[in-house]
Image (cartoon, rainbow, N blue to C red; front, side, top):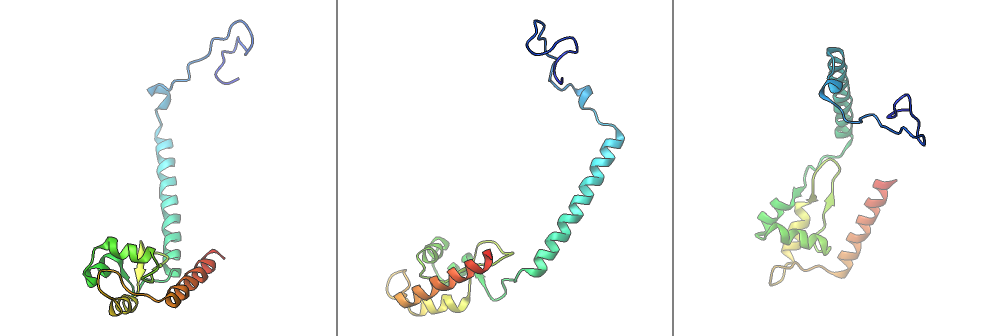
Amino acid sequence: MAGWTSSSRPGTRSTERLSTRRTPARLAMGDADRMAIEALRVFVRGIVREALAEAGAAAPRPEGFIGTAEAARRAGVKQETILAWIGKDLLPASRVEGAKGWKIRPADLEAVLGGQQTGSRPAASVADLAQERGRRLADSVKRRS
């Protein structure tokens, strides 16, 4: 039984346990172990690189989209404002596979800014918001299936 001396068993009088501490001598690896670990690392890295390359080739590129920082710069507002507009469904945005953060079509930003009223909030009709929510829901269902 691991951890118990050969002369004792659990439940007997002599229950002196072997030390479970690892000493440096017990952790020392030989050259063969190091070579095997390095070979495994190289192998795994190769597999990961191949998988990432395949996923990158299959994933749609966010060409024609801009990020929230660029949208904020173009709109003359803070990035937090752009994120708030997205959160309130006032500005259409998508999460594009293979890209970080929200991606916005410049035409959508221009449409929102073109219809902007006074203040920093863009105007959006209820019909536009409902249509955008429907599009997002359909995109979400497509990604999950």
